[in-house]
Amino acid sequence: MRSTTRMASAVAGAALLLGCVSGPAASHPSDGSGKRVLVLSKTAGFRHDSIPDGVTALRQLGETGGFTVDATEDAAAFTSANLRRYDAVVFLSTTGDVLDAAQQTAFEGYIRHGGGYVGIHAAADTEYDWAFYGGLAGAYFQSHPAIQPATVNVEDRAHPATSGLTRTWDRTDEWYNYRSNPRERAHVLASLDETSYTGGTMNGDHPIAWCQTYQGGRAFYTGGGHTKESYAEPAFRQHLLGGIRYAFGAAQADCRPENGYRPLFDGTPESLSAWRQAGPGSFSLSDDGTLTSNGGLGMLWYADKGFASYSLKLDWKMDGDDNSGVFVGFPASDDPWSAVSNGYEIQIDATDAPDRTTGAVYSFQSADLKKRDRALNPPGEWNTYEIRVEGERLRVWLNGVKINDFTNTDPARSLRDGHLGIQNHGADDQVSFRDLRIKELPARSAAPGN
Image 1 (cartoon, rainbow, N blue to C red):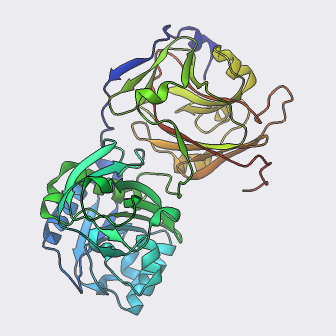
Image 2: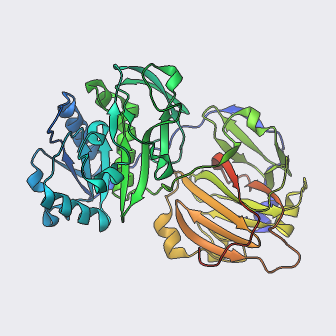
Image 3: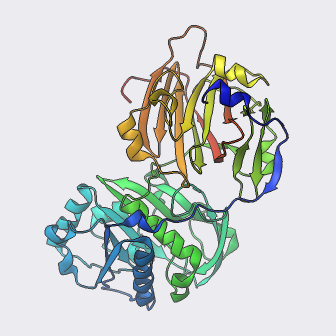
């Protein structure tokens, strides 16, 4: 929300439009400017003949992405002094024990001081006796069936490694089974549909790409990349580029484990049946499952039920200096001003006063701007909010970083029971949303400081 003058000029119309097409955000070559990446492809076991293709692809991604790639088979590069030169280290289909004890210690220190890790394919078939590495990679290789086509379900469409993908991704590769499921400790980005191929052994929950923060560093792993052809696939190359950008900090993402959520809007027209448009304007639904605001001032709100204690997650993107917000804690109403007067808005706005810009509880409390600025992806890229309400306490995480902690003291408002909505602000504001999901929490007051 901004000024009432701008609101009054918003375009009228309340129909929900279907079928509009929106494309992925353009990549920016300067995103990795000045960054350095070390690629290790040493093998002490099976050696993949795709390694040269992988090295070539990573060098090409560096050229277009603005970062420098150094490739080596020599583990002597793993010294504390040398690793400090790099913003991320890629383990490219490494196998077996590739680092000695001193090199392992140097790499542990590198990660603990904020270094980035990218594991590709057989990086999970590496260093079985090094517990730190096993935790960093997220899971160890167990077995694989023959190379064959399979369907990949993209679970997170905000992370830079997967934001440009469709909800299902059909491709051919050698599909690893893992000794454990990383879902409880890492954030799963994509998983295999075990009914789409033969030889999956993970009982229908088969992560294949994930990310996490680990002992001070950032980690991304993908199980793809066995075949030479993988490194010529535009979608797979973009997948790798996004993982690298996350690992060296050019892109932000919420890589905390995410379990127990259910969808409120999953990108399908059917999932909109519980939502209603209040006031003028509308939201368009594109073929890729993205909702984009049009006109206003209005709001699309979840009318099926209100919520009292919950964690709401959603992905959002703006293209420029646009305006929108997420309303919580308001009574059921087809008047969008009821949400303004009786609830709270978590703002989305590139530029405004501190208590009226992204991460603010609009007009009540600014976000921590230093944390917000470090966590925020720029216009054109996806961001993830977690909005957690417990009692009268409202907390906001942006891309996994807590940026606001607000407690309602207004007797005319209450967060203990209310509806949720997303705002369409005006004719000049187009903000996009994906994957609204919720986890209801026990009804209790949150302890301060968490």
